Amino acid sequence: MTERTRNVLTLVLLLALVLPAYLRGVAILYDLDRPPDVDLLRDVGAAQNILDGGYGKDPIYLGETAWYPPLLSVILAGLSSMTGSPVMVVAARAGIHLDLLPLAAFAFLLWRSFGRIAALFGVAGYLYLVHDHAPAWLAPSLSPYLFAICFMHGAFCIGLYLAFRLRRPSAGWSQWCAAGALVAITFVGHPSTAMILCLLLGGVGASQLLKVLRDGPARLQQVGNLTSFLIIAAIGAWILLAPMIEAYGMERRNPFSTTWQMEGLLLKDLPGTLLDRPLLVSVLIAFGFFVSLRRRDSISAILLYATAIITGLLLWSSVSAELANTHQRSVILSFVPAYHFVFYLELMGCLFFAIGSMVLVKWAIGSVRRWIPSTFYDRVRHRFARPVFRRAAIMVGILALMVLLPFTSSFLHRKINSMVNKAASRPADPYAPSFDFIHAGTAPMDVFLTQDRVAMDLISPAGRKLVATDRYFSNPYVDLAPRAADRDSMLTFIREDRVKDFLTLAAVYSVDFVIPNVRPSARWNGILSPVHEDPRIRIYRLERGDRNVGTGRN
Image 1 (cartoon, rainbow, N blue to C red):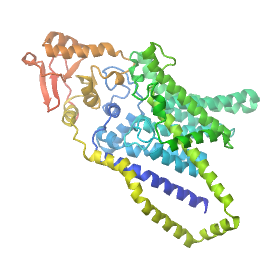
Image 2 (image 1 turned 90 degrees about the vertical axis):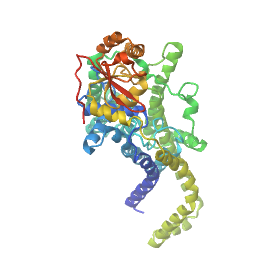
Image 3 (image 1 turned 120 degrees about the horizontal axis):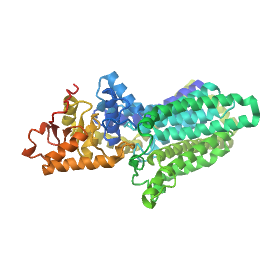
Image 4 (image 1 turned 180 degrees about the vertical axis):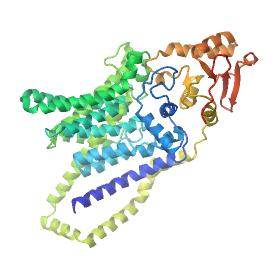
């Protein structure tokens, strides 16, 4: 069998592995008009803010500076402009297609670094075996939803591949520039990916610098390579951080956006969460972890271990937020919520699963070849070289698949059919009428007063401004406490008919629209004018002389 034939066969097998998961995602999303998670709705609002001309501005707070990495929002805004579809629909349906890119990067990493067998087993584990029932944002898979962490782990895979290349003395200036550009992109994509790649690729560069110090002027080219990498990576960091440095001096005043802890990632539950998978899969991951050092290319194994250690340390830095809450102090600073690094540890588990499976399969094949007489093996190999035997082998394979179909149908039912049925039975979007009104009847700079749930589910994805929002989604450089207190006070003033107090505080935040908890009494006639009402939401416009009513956007 020629090299080209092997490559084509591997591609066919990879496509056969991916197709069921891809079709599952398409079945889930084909008629979805609204993303199902509040994280996705935040990205919708940021993309709508860009389309409304607000790039660089906080999509939630009027007059503040954007703080969240903008790459995914820019992609959503661009796709919306190109297709003419609303951002909400693009964000709801594009995930399964865009998430093919990180899967392709993962398969590329395994194929080029460890071979075809590793790529096949790695993709199978990635899609179906390693993570079992973990949610899409906690473990890598072909997610139907466009979470930033799911999209950006493709950059992590390419970065690890570049690390394997850059540690070679033959690595040139262009490869180091490519690594710097990749890190720059990850800075505007997701901070967890950027932190891992900075430490990993920076460590590779530092090892090259040590060689320069040891070998003298003959290796000065490595200094230029490392300098180019650092400059290009710093440009990406500057694009993200410069506006926040200028506006806030990077002084964090709302730490909750980086200290959110999900149940299962607290210290007492973390080991169980990381080991929540079938026993055989865990054994293969452990086997791959320990046999990596037996590879002829031991430096690649060291890089794999270094990546796992870096990710584990960053996970600890995030889990330490729990210690801060418990003991009023933190062992290491918390940068992003811990689940991001659990995600990358799960991805490393996929890599070690692929390596362990590859070594085991090669050992089994070698053992069989040693036990089978060489004359018999050569005779079989010679016969299978004939076209008639190849066709017969293909037919036997098809028949075997037909025999196994009843067994695989139960697996597919659990993994696919149940989610398809769930998608088919989902209710209509309860916020759709209010969402349409906000887009048609309000302006991008209009400020809404409402409670957290409505703020996150309706106002934020519409790209409109708020007095305050949920603490985990609020700008970390803006003090949330006075905003939240004033929001609660204004809603209380409406309930208690304290008109003067309400108007005084509303003027501070330039409030234009109100979604109160209760229907205002007759005392608010002429002050709060009803402009939209449906079974779930009532929206009132604040009538005051100094406000400029926007014409909205059709």
